[in-house]
View (cartoon, rainbow, N blue to C red):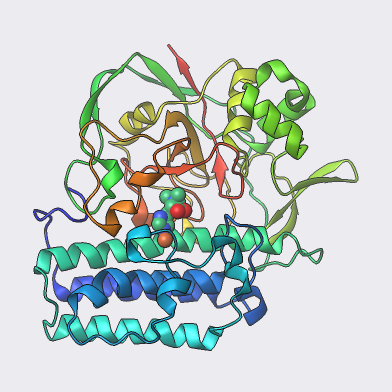
Length: 421
Ligand code: AVJ
Ligand code: FE
């Protein structure tokens, strides 16, 4: 069941408000270590300033719930509709994405009072039963708004890392914690019989539209690595000329590598014969036992070929993960860096798959602007699975599909190998 399905189970009003306030508070907690200058930084078109994330997640509740369904709702400022609409064509005009960092007005204080304005209206509307839509649909929309904001918590963290990385002071967002004590562990394999399996959301609890319908998939027997690819593995690839060996690369990947001069993951540099990396805990020597992060699909694919293995398909990953406990290094741990201390299939870094982000059989997005949420992005992007140290744990499900373009690196992106049996 997806977020606009009438059959989804409504939660009680107080449960819904708990989720709402927990989500809103967590977002503001993430921005607490930042000053007003940090809050306005935008380093590239793909990334947004923290202040914009604070406002856009608020706009989402206003645009999709308060304006259409709460009679008498007065927007705080009608001009915010344009400034904080991200990509919803059916919701009207939008401020240019690459210029979000030029919005010195509204100020941080004004954005925070916009947040409070929308929160008060939502709470008030819920408590007096003032909304004009069915309670279960209202519930589904508020829940979607909360999950949307959780997605933006992750983007806020990764966008911040990108923005701060351009400052030669290499600022630490949070104090540095001791490095991982994990021993370097050989990669082992778990065997999976494959056969006729089902993947996709099964209708219990929240999911995005693109996670369904649940459907059958045929899998040949396969095996999955029991750990993520580590920095140590990656350095072996680099030392073996992985970045210089064209035959390991997809043609398009090689062209992107050439154009950008890639010779290591994003945020890496060499100093005194050692690899260093910039993290939200400041600069650190690359930890050989930690999962590699900030590699593109093209790099992950070349690494897999160099290893004599391959990336898993999203169906292989989901079939293996479905029955396992969601346990791993997620946003709530507060480390903001991958560590590789968990033996599970989950967390630390998103895992590139060889699957294109395409509609499942029978998929159709909901009508209206909300249908633009995922469906219109179903071309030229690859699916990643498993969540990362920047993903709120509450976001994770075995059916969860995130997606990025194959050349993107600034998210917490890594890989786990697969192979045929
Ligand atoms: C699923 C992470 C690719 O970054 O646009 C945020 C998440 N969707 N607001 C994105 C999202 C709408 C989405 N990703
Ligand atoms: Fe968004």
